[in-house]
Length: 349
Image 1 (cartoon, one colour):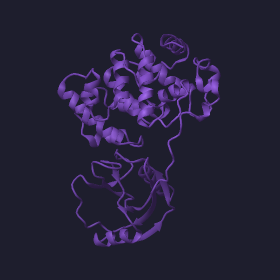
Image 2 (image 1 turned 120 degrees about the horizontal axis):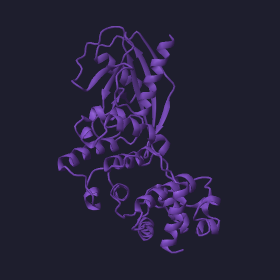
Image 3 (image 1 turned 45 degrees about the vertical axis):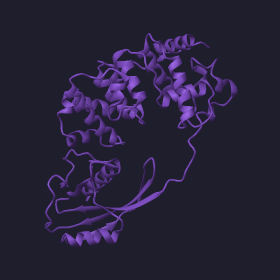
């Protein structure tokens, strides 16, 4: 099938079946497209929609985002994961605001934090109607099956091959619709499991479908055993049922978010309490839980300690606080879950 025939099939399907009512498809601006593309990195549309709506309501313009401190931005990313995205988004917003124009070339966009070639291509196609290929996870899956390309897509030679195919197939006209159509195909029809091949516009020309190898492609990433890190999270509550939180370093896992004090053992947590003159009135070791990052498992044991005496240690300015549910803070999903559970249990007591 020629590139023009491929494009025609994809665009005809998009005109009839494609998604056109997603929130970032309304009132299209470079800022809204960029925000949506960052949020959609490694995150499903259904998860992103409420975050996008809340974020755009709070920060309707790039200028409003750039002028807001990062501590006031992170709560609106809380639970979405991959928090470096939020830090890069804020940093890049400030740079673009200083430049007083939104970059509209591939080189300019890729020079900014958090924007790779595929994200840049999507911004240029959708926001500026400039023809650029993309290669996000959905498009990789469509092209890998369409051309029956075996081999893990993370390998440089496979990745280059897919970029070449994507470039060849991307049209000059209607590039915004085509870009959206390819992402939609992967998200709604050419899914990882149980793809709807029978209604796919490419089904008669898809080599994986013809060869019976759809379920084998894309080739999975070679499995490796993830290391396990074990920590103890201290749930220290005072007489008002507030929880003591500390701010994490600005970089690294959960960078810049608020978290529970972290220790390598229950004994270490006790020593810390002793050093801070925390009078323990009750304590309980809660069931252990696991949170999986891309490169390791975090097994954490919550240690709930109640104190009814004043805490005598001096809190570092803006680095620690007593938390209650009325505060709007940037919290990682496991920490938010523990705090919500603690709050719920105390309401029932």
